[in-house]
Amino acid sequence: MDDINWDELLKKIEEGGYTHDALFRQLMDMVKSMLISKKSFAVALYEISQKYNVDESTIRDACQRRLSLKSIKDFKNLTKYPEDLMRLLNKKFPNRNQEINDLLK
Figure 1: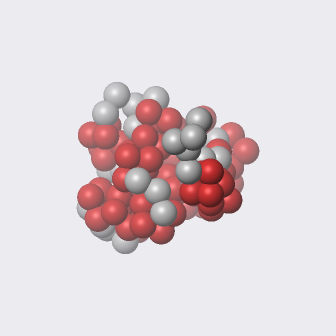
Figure 2: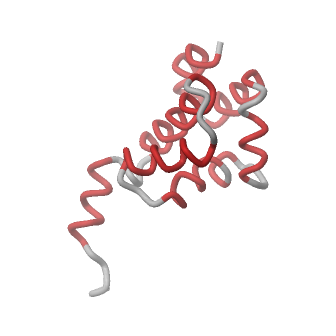
């Protein structure tokens, strides 16, 4: 337990690095970057990880495992089909449907 940097962990929790809300915000920012700003996955990944002060692997996890996708390629493909992406996000975040629909319609 002595190997844990408690200050860093608490900072990430305060910044939202490990909460359900943070996961949602990170995903929505990825979607905005890719769909609205037309950025590549790699550029969006870098920018969003910097914005939230988390490892890129955290954002990758949000885009793949947390959405129950088999690969990052599946997420990239979903961004080409906003209605399918909207259905998946609405299923995963039922309390945030209005925000999702507003972004993707």
